View 1: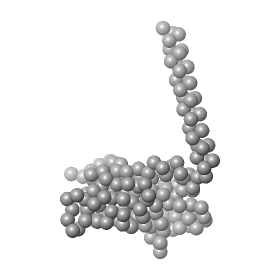
View 2: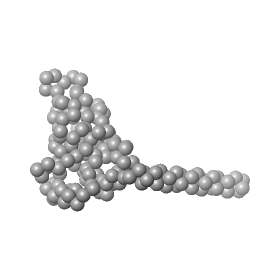
View 3: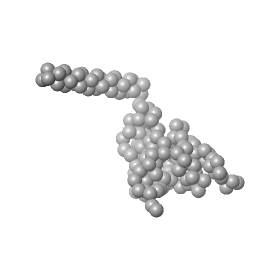
View 4: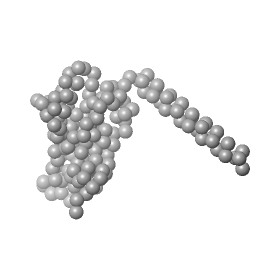
Length: 161
């Protein structure tokens, strides 16, 4: 029986806070069998993960997939470097954009898509501290506006009754 749909394993919540996401890519990940079994149990951490381009290939570093508990001597190393599977054109585009300067590759989420492990990879630019504060202020202002609108709508409903 083939799996359908998308099941999220891990997300990097700090990424959108620390970086301005310019573009996203979906990449396959070259994994060992025990890594996939560990991921099926929902165990992974993208907290310290980042991607690099070396010799025309994209590599994921810092992704933590704990050892599979029922694994034997064939178990994997938890923080090994893993190859990302992208089309040649996408890799060439990434290399060009990274060389422009100031951009980095940040993993946003790790998930199963129709039974295969995929990684959402973002081409991102680091945010400065004042940008982060500005984003928080904007989010708070929008939240306050939504609350005020909700209260206004509820107040009108009471007048009709």
